[in-house]
Image 1 (cartoon, rainbow, N blue to C red):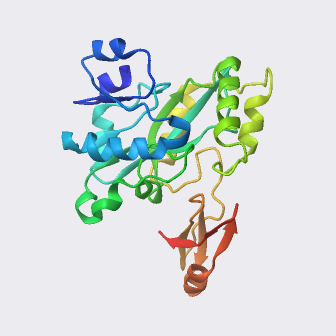
Image 2: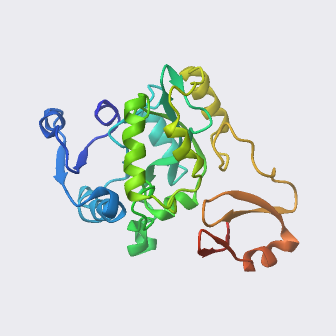
Length: 272
């Protein structure tokens, strides 16, 4: 709530079986209630919210946060406006707080803000979310096709305490028992570990690294690129997870024609 108060002109909060509506409204924020079952209809709830509610505010930039997340103080209104003067999405570094530190291995990059500039050209596709009951993201699909690191860091408090991690385990066992909706099932196993060791958290160092990585393509800041871009090469995105690879220009058409299967689904490659 403090991040929204500090960074936005107008805030509307989507409530799903929530219990703290009065607290939210004490900030002067608008609220919308949608109590469809989150673990089954999450993508549709979010898509309808953006299309039918947020669009009415005619935003220039939308900031999207879960209620257990906050931007660090280095993110300001001015830095967001400057970033969106040349970019359409902000692919931020999400720091999973863990015990008395954070979990570096399972911290990651993700979209937490996007521009409405592409809407007129994209029409209905602008609003479409990944159709998954869990792990569908906080932004429409198109925003994940522009995964260029932004110099912004988000702290995620929802896994800090072991009891909260266990709640998450139960949720995923209910809604993703077959582990078909997550790119790395090892994440579920990490959540189950009791008293797992945390990495030392130095927010200032993480912010500095995010600034250094700004403008580069994914993966997240603590992982080296799969292949560095070289002369006479182009960048191609793997469809199922957005991983970026480097391809020689004379092999581009062959690469784009290739398909592969992941968890029973057929995917291909896209030129960035």
